[in-house]
Image 1 (tube, each protein chain N blue to C red):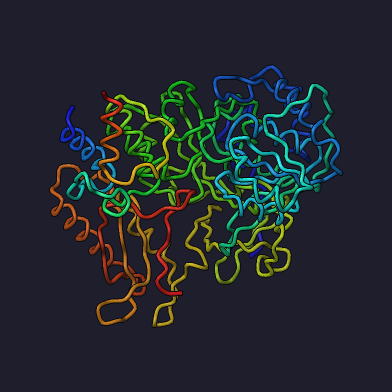
Image 2: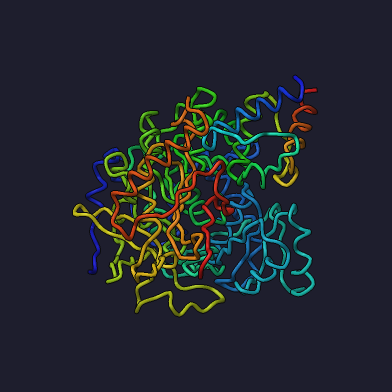
Length: 506
Length: 80
């Protein structure tokens, strides 16, 4: 089943008409940047550390930084190793508009891994934050030829931007990918641009917004949906330097749109209820949520606060968003409609395969022969499509549990049944052993405190288990779990705040 | 505010996350192994403490707090 819906028309009704007509396609980031400077020059592009920078000032600063890169041959790969800050953004704009390739190196990497990343990417230069200088000792010792440029460097001499084509390389973004091995996805200018434009669909007010940046810029969701779409739309990006300060930053900056993972959206809701005030501020209208499954409960709760929480689906390999859900309230389980131009196919086993302008040009430094089926990228995600063209993620191939009966079970598909309860915050279905050593399906849940207020602890657990058991009994037999455990605490989480899955059996 | 009162407020904060119950909280409780705090719940706890006690954490890392007593010490120091 191969499909490419021209879905632009489907998204039209969700956006202000005048703004929708302004959503245009550009071939490259350099072409987009020219338009940004012409249309938004005097507007504030970035607010960081108490300073504001207009688009024109960002270009002026980037022009000086381009001079520092001018001796590099075309399409050189330049690493950026720094925490979220204005200097990161200035370096990225300078590298990309010089016709070079920006390799976003996560700031939490240690010294050996930074060296490994520099080799894997074949870097020709490395822009680094002076605060991270001590983690460059191995790079300095083993690659003494590699130019190291402090991210706060400047030059009075300005160098002009170059013009890039859609198929020119633009960025390398690290990912665990579908096999879990860390590697860099090489994204072209065309891919980054398509991902950037995709971020404009499905909500009312698109241009001249106030974005708060919480996600790391080295993550594709932070880089493309947060930074790039903010620049594209003439919006202001406020850099939150420390997540613990996010609510203070929100009170000061009053964002209108935020891009976040569900765990943070859940946390904001819990804090708002505990302290009896909307911690996200009265100006916030839209939350773009992704990188992990979004619970229907969250969507409903935010809707009551007048905030549209829109789930999306995307990968690093697809330059971020592939689909977005403008009907989050009526179809809360869906990750939405594929964006315009997205080519996709659902394989016989249910796996989603992707092709199109937004797709990467392969991985850097590693060979992943199973990443493609012909020229289709294999996402590793199992999906279904409803009659109206909305996508639903039903699981991941690598998480499939093969039962002793030979039946395949996708944990996510089973978890979805239990997550329908408002009193369930998170759940995990996994394969375990019973006391006789037989393999069974087990369920652990983290209840949502606010939905169980007023009950005694033991009464609470009994109630949760009893409701889940009732639900369990209605499921197809191979989906039924044999053990239900109610946790007192959250699941272990990855740095991206995703739940770490149990792996008892390989 | 004495240490017992601080711990009681911490209990209320932690109860608002999770399932609303907190297993016996003592100064020796290990934040990770006894209370099962993930990176998200640590962030939640820091933000909620700032709001509840009207204090501001310096740029401390999660690894700076191992036991509940470390958190209580820190809050006491800030309130002093």
